[in-house]
Length: 322
Ligand code: F6P
Image 1 (tube, rainbow, N blue to C red):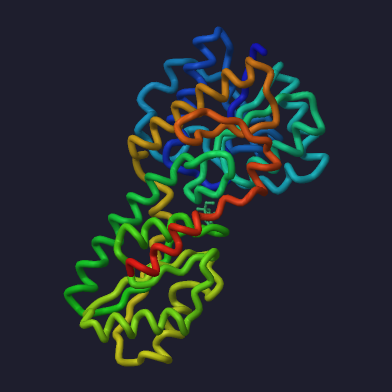
Image 2 (image 1 turned 30 degrees about the horizontal axis):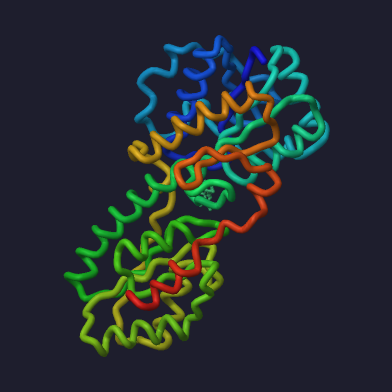
């Protein structure tokens, strides 16, 4: 392996730049050249690829977003699209690829590496923390810090006005962000896809809080929970508790931006360098992760489909603490 391509794909996550830097620096250390593909798999199809020199990744470790840009490519999920992508790689004599992203990125890499003789290694980069085979994905910690900072600010005004706030955080399929933000903010209610809390149960929790003399409450809602978005939940609760004054706040894409936390920078640096050594050791079709502080490799198929729900004990604990 002499030429390694790197791309970021799907939703961006703080720390992706630190991972790119690590891939470039580690490859250089072993005398390999790195090519950056712009806008994910779309760029692979369209030939948006260029050599990245060591100095070009200076001063990016602390930056949010991704210098390689990102996209969600639908064309790559067609055989013609993948054939064109392969031709781009061949035209630039690329021997292997490192893809940084989440579930969609990994699914695409898995299909591609089964069809073509290009080794692929994945680095888990998504704020959702929903990739199996790593304790944490790149961006999750930063997104949590952003969310908790926002919730702390909302808490001030909720407290001043004696209001109930329904705060929606990201997390399409999993409730990691909502669960951690909810625990970290001492929320009265946490609604995530994994705990299936019903409106009636939430109303009950809020009522109990009022009985105990609670003057304001925070309810953290994962966008993927079964009861709908924060606005819909607020409306449903109001039907049962019209006496409570409620407000809705959707934190949204704020969670995807900003300077990565130190945790995410270190995680990204370790995963980037390990992805390079994995390719040089002949590994392919795998995701690199860290479990209990050790580097581990997981087949793409497992990384995508094995259960990465929050721990049951953590979910149960919220019933005791709220
Ligand atoms: O997968 C990361 C994520 O931020 C999800 O939490 C969210 O549902 C989705 O991406 C939003 O994607 P987009 O920015 O394309 O709307």
